[in-house]
Length: 275
Length: 282
Image (cartoon, rainbow over all chains, first blue to last red; front, side, top):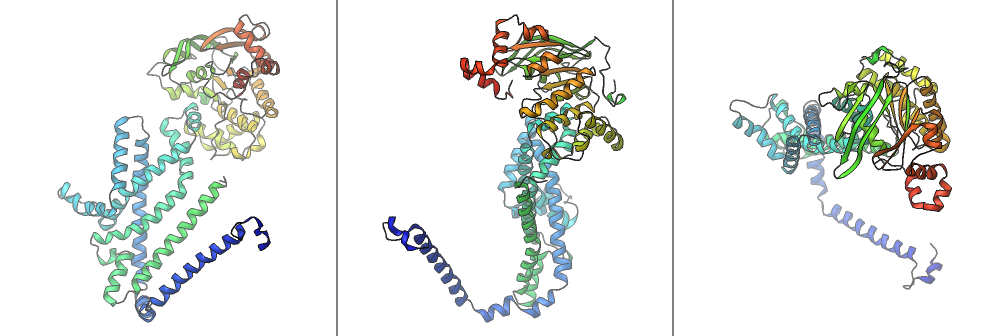
């Protein structure tokens, strides 16, 4: 911190000194921005509309028993369908049968490239048109699960494939040498190791699904089927107050932040090479 | 022939002196690269045969063709009379009778030593957990690792891992054991333990086909030694003759390099360096 070392610096400042100055300038800009936003915002209106205690109190307990619960259900069903479908697509992608590989590649590229909203609309409108009189079973839960699942499967398939490929080739050879079939070796030896590797990215996928489940509001759901976003939006309209949106947002964070922390911890644990 | 009848797995139950492994006109090419150019030899039941030769001579490929980890391009391989190369053969059933030990151990890292030795017994031989674990313990004890049953591979030394791998193969009650450079990935001070286990196994009458660079093991334990170079068998015969009195020039120069690496390093450093490095492609 002594300026005495400035001898070598041409501008009369040591390198450390210059870095300090640059940091202070950055902090300054950041602080000015924060203060400007705080000054420009209309705090009384904000408090009334976004942090209205009375409005917030009216949300309970339904926002938890209906909204949060349904978000969790849609997410879980979507994740389950996505995981199973993703595993199938991943195995097809790795198959020695070319048509399977082609199908898997097309599937992954198509569903990764489509907006999720489009998939939701297709599941609710397109499926009954394509298969007259048929609909995705399970009502809103089924439709949301399928829409989320088929989209998530495309991402998960790539994740699972990379996990399987990260398991050394010798593992399959050792398992097959013991007389295990390909399927048996996959089940008992390869997949347990692959899933251990991909638990962090899968947890991330769960966070994404949790948020994406909000798209169910485009399916048209009954009162009991509303999840957090729909619930918050409806009540915001009903009460003429934006607080429900904030509460719904907090509810999301209650799910997603612990999941993110968990995923980060798992990742760290893996990097340290523990089991 | 159910391996389940012989939980201990020793000794080989084919008729003594019968052919355990027969290899006839075996060829294997990877694309344009012909690694095996017509191999003929056989291993009798109860015999220990060591395959030696320089890197890239096809030793490992030969071994991997015996349990069909590599599909031969041409030729016939029979194990205890079953034609492995028959397209209709139930390869899983054949592999059950052939134990394989790899250079890189290939233990299952998500399972304990006990789990490693038990899992294939349970999934393939359909033994119940208690029996599989009892047999696993027996075999771990046999390789001197009774105290390591609950250790994960990452907690074991290379030598211990390789011994677990041997126990894992033995627990299936194989008629034949294949060893693919079992000590090449080990620190020198750990080689002895593994070779010791293999020696005991040989003395117990197990049929063994061993690809190795350990000349003293080959000389002392093998009934016969096969010298391979360039994808063909150059010379084969009793261990004492092939190693101490080789007939072919190629065998002689190879042995000179292996048995006296220091001299070889002066003479043709590059070749001997290449030899010492591990050769997964061989």
